[in-house]
Image (tube, rainbow over all chains, first blue to last red; front, side, top):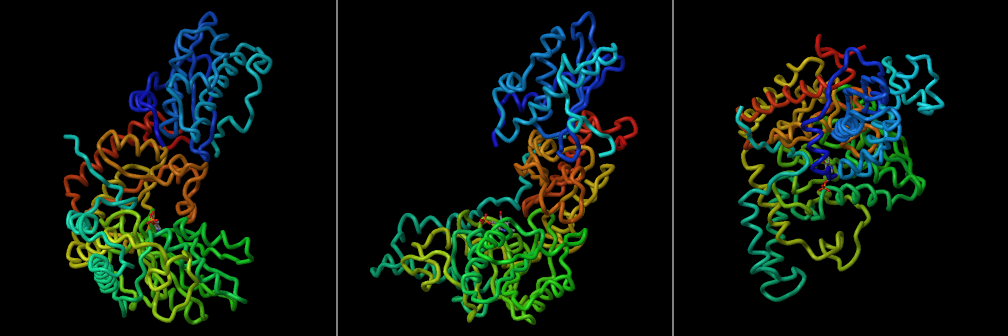
Length: 143
Length: 393
Ligand SMILES: Cc1ncc(COP(=O)(O)O)c(C=O)c1O
C-alpha cells in the first residue's frame, strides 16, 4: 500500500489538531469497533468558519484526511464547507489507496456532523440543510 | 536520542545471510545446469540439491534425506499438506486446524468445503494456546488430518505439538505442522515431535525468498499438488530452484548450528516487552514464556496500529500490526480476535520481531520511540483522556 507524500506529511505533521473550548459546532463520527473515530470542532462567526480543530483515532489515512479536511474549510463560509466532498479531500492529498477511501468519507461526515450541531444549537433543524447523518455513523461512547 | 535504523519485522521476512548469498552465486554463474540433464554440469547441480537435502534433513532431525521435498515456500508446503491429504480420502472428510493458523492453512482448509470436506477450528486460550483436551473432543471417526502451527506469526505462541500430535495419531489421523515461524528460530526435531508433515520457509531464517520445504515422513502418502516432469522423486514437479535451495540449506545450517544465542535473545525480548508494558493501558499478546525468542507483541489502548507503524517508521523502526487498517479489511486479525480481544483493543496491535543483530541499545530505542509515538497519537485521539492518561469512557 502506497501513501502519497502529502498523506505522509499530513500524518506526520497534522494541521489543526486539538480542541476548541468555545466551539459552537462539534461532531463526532465513526466507531472504535471499525477503528476510525473523528471529532471536529468548529468556531463559526457570521457564517464563516473562523477556526477548526480535530481529534482522530485511526490509521494514517484517517489522520491525514481529517487534517486536510480542516485545511480546506478553515476561513470559508458554512455554505462552502457544506459543499466539501470526500473526493475533494482525496484530491488534495494526491489520492488514497482504494481501501482507504472510506477515511475521506468519514472526514466529510465529521464536518457535516459538526455543522449539524451548529444548526441545532441555533434551534434550526439541520436535516434539510446538511442532510441526514446516519445514527450509526455517530460515535457511541459506550461502544 | 540519535536516530537509528532498526529492522524489527523479521517475522515478515529476513535479510539473507552473507554466507547463504555467497553460496548461491556459483549456481547461477557456473553450475547452472538443469539437474535433470545428464552431463557433468547438470550432475553437479543434482549433487548440490542432494547435499542441501541432507543438510535440511539433519537440521530437522529427519530419519532420512528423502523425507525432505523442496517447494516454492511456506504457502505451497501448507497447501500441499492439506490438499494432498484430502485428495486421497475416500470416506473421511474432516479436518481439524487451530483458530489462529496462517491463511496459507486456514484458507486452504476452507477451500475444500465446497468439495464436501468439513473443517473444525479449535479455539485458543487468551495466551494463544490450543489445549490437548479441545483437540481430543474435536476428533471424529472421519478426521483424517490435524494441522496446528508450531509457532504463531503474530503473537509468537509456541504450541505443545508433541502432545497434540499424539492425540491425532491415537485417532488415526495425520498430523501436519506449519513450522514456518519456528524453524531456524528454536530447535525443531521432527522425530521428537512425531509429526507426519512439517512446512518451512527459507526467507524466515535468512535464506532467499520463494523457496521452502516440506518434511513428509517415510510411508506417509499424500497426493501431488504440482504435476509435471516428475522432479523431487515424482512428488513435486518443476525444474528445481537450485541456487535458492542451496541458499536455504546454507542459511538453515548456520541458524541451527548453535543455539547458545537463545538466552540473550530471550532477555532482549523480555526487556522489550517489559518496556512496552510501561505504557499505561498496554497488554502483552501471546504467551508470557512459551513464545518465540524474537517476538514481542502487545496491544496498546487508544490508538490504531497503522498509526504506530507509520510513526515508528518515521523513527527508523520497521514493525508491523494486526490492526484492520494494516490487514486490508475492516476486521483486525483473526489471531487477535481468537485470543479474545475486542475489536477496539485489537486495533492497537504492535508486533516487533527483532533479530540476532539487535542490541540492547536498539531495544531501548524502540521502547523510547514507541512511547513517544503512542503519546503523540493518544494526544490526538478523541477517545483518550490525555490529562489523566486513560481511556475516555
Ligand atoms: C506461519 C506462516 N505460515 C506460512 C507462511 C507463508 O510462507 P511463504 O511466505 O514462504 O509462502 C508464513 C509467512 O508469511 C507464516 O508466517
